[in-house]
Length: 396
Image (cartoon, rainbow, N blue to C red; front, top):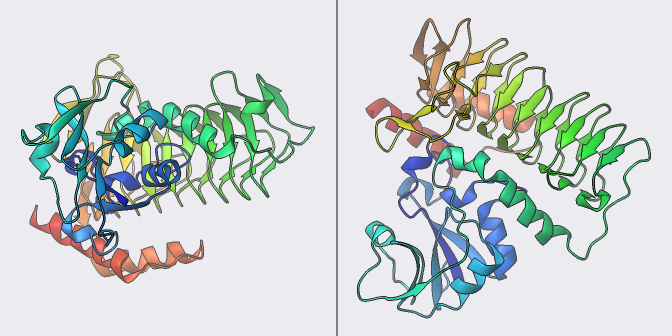
């Protein structure tokens, strides 16, 4: 038995974050969506995704009955139980959309089946709460839900490492959890809004001000004097400083200096230069619009607050400024004065004064150097994905 997490028609709607990963590899809280499914179900998990990503994220070879699940769904206890009760030929549905299918070996629901479940499958209504990360801004909007549920999943029945006496906790101290090797010194941690999780060998340096819910991944750092407003989640090996509000950094990325990041999502291996700032609110207080790769135009987010979305391996130079709802593609290098365009293609080089195309070989070499600093290697499948993204951008 196994669970297959399908992109379920969401992949293009979540670009640029999903250029380099399946939908369920996103990390809205402490865990990737796929990790939460695996831990809650106890089953092997794999992905049904775009063809060019399949080598890096192969499908499970399990021959038995399987459950195919919308990979954008957060796996609450209630949802996981409902999915695992499905039999082959049944579809778990909420409203007009399918959440999951019970399937036999080698069966595969088509993309259209998610929006309109096949008539030959028996519908099973799901009446619980559904949290779906189907647009980039949903990741920070529903970050708090993921942190709270991941926190409970990971810490229930366990004891936190001791928190140093020089820290100040405002709220419930039991909502602060330090994994093995975590360090937190002379900081203020406010748990009235939600839990604060500090991963293995992560460090909260002196003078940080934290308002939960907040997740800090393994080996990540909050720099001295950082001000972080939750819900915010930073994946493993991140370096975070300055002021951050309601933002998610998937992992291995740096926002290590002063500057503001708000209502934003950054991929992996990004770097924001010193004093990089983004706007998260229009002067008119109107709805923020964001470029959608799926629609080929700007679409409304339904929110006044929306900042920056940045694909993997993208960078910004010092003193960079990003407007509300800016979308930066994979391996883009943004620098110079003024506000750059709100849509910056993958492998673009430049800023407000114009954009050129970043040479793919130089981009690959840069990625290798950056990853080596965290003792990581650019694997052949990961390099092939970057080359595929580059080729697709040139055809666009």
